[in-house]
Image (tube, rainbow, N blue to C red; front, side, top):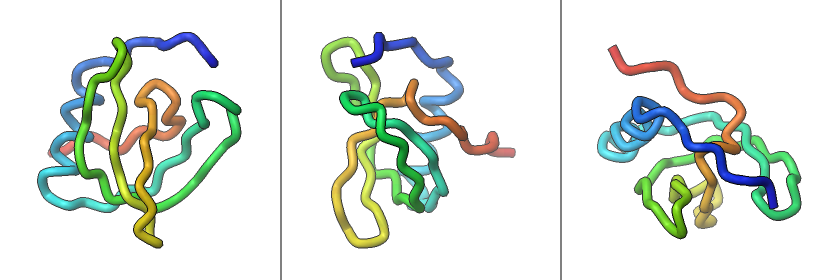
Length: 81
């Protein structure tokens, strides 16, 4: 497992806003255990902190639940204006 790298607060805030307004995001990320790369359109549900790491809880287009570590997202969404 890769060591956790803290993310800037504006990243967490951006994803929390996406969850609040039910925005769908096209994200690319790596699995925290296997380092396998994923790319999907996801619906953010909540940003949570567990064991000192911050995760995005989301659903993919098929309704599968995802838990994505924020520091492993490779293409962060653009800021809200």
